Image (cartoon, chains in turn blue, red):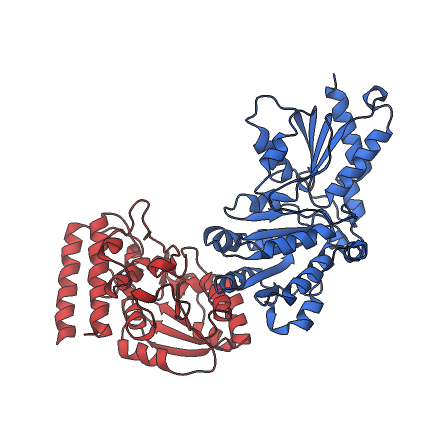
Length: 331
Length: 271
């Protein structure tokens, strides 16, 4: 697939799930080992075209997530490259022990695709929100965790995962018309964080859907002339597309900032924020860290943007929290 | 000269007893005894691999889904010269390759890590339809108590629906589980449940090597499950059908009594 403005815009319109399905269809053209599996979520995974084009390489396990992971593991042991999809919550929590056993302990080369992490399922409600998946999976040995920031990065993650022998979880987030973070092609490497912009005052480390909101929040902060005594703040933004193994070097390079901020559409317990905190905790000189994410409570369900508002994850609310915290420490 | 599977099963029982006594610690001893004939027939007459071709892609695969049968499994591997005496004697030692539940190692002929129940059948399904195994058979040994796990039924339905006929499951149906008799804990009609999932169901005496062989060799177009009726602790009278022997250590006195029983049994089989 050629990466140009048109493909970037098309993938974005499809949202991360559609972008994943399109990518898998494309890479499976030249790689007969790739098999797509889903637990009764073919269309939702963007896999309709894959299923029609490669019916012998498509497996629907029915609504059976535990079996989904076990079958994928057996396929991987037998020389295939299985991509297994279902809602992130159902993969990470219902089939968590299967992931530990087959991907962690037995190191089977399975690619898990967690659909609609965060609040993408909107009014479906709490059962369908994926806000604990990173926390549940991050402690499992041998598992790579990818969290793409936009649809082009979904393409990059899906492709890169097929080229490694590492058991991998790809966390898809956001809804259709996924914001474009990368307007042009760029270099992507698993385990190597992407510096979106450099800066000295504040370092914002974000993942998945929140990379775009962090970029917008930084713009809002800089537009508020009152902040920093009228001086424009210098803000670094880092896209942590690989949650595990975390890019410790890139995180330690942020220690000179006065404030480190982590932003994620995931529980503030056990996710990106925790991961960053673990990285910097034993450093002597470090800034304080502001955790922005999903607070530890189940609020009443609503659509995607409503939920982001409720948990303070819109660009405006992220900017507000950062400004408030920065004002308490700037002197 | 190839041993008969009945003699091999006997040797496996002696090995099990010897190992448990030598480690001076608890082990899943009764589950090991109930598996002796099933493993003897499987390794002696059915599986197509030897020590020299463990890493070959063109061989059958063996999944011990009920991981607590590990001791009998290691004894079978030892008697079949797949693992060495030294390896076999490293059972249950710190940092060893042969812990109380098997840990996957293709080089040692261990195709599956187990211990947590209900996972073997799904893995077998994936293996059976994978690129490298379409022409190989996948054998899975499960416990009857293990069928309490819902994940087994997700796999049983899938395998039946897709008619994955290169899978043979064997249920070591010893009617007991950790807390006692299965009928008192969770009773269900296992043959009917497999039939309802479109499997070929064969019931047999799991301590009769001829019946087991016939069951393995019966051709079917469907996935096959052999429900092998066994006795937990089979061969040692004071262990048979006693839940306290699910996981236990053995005293010197008990060891001597058990050894005597196995020796008497051997004579009878010999006759």
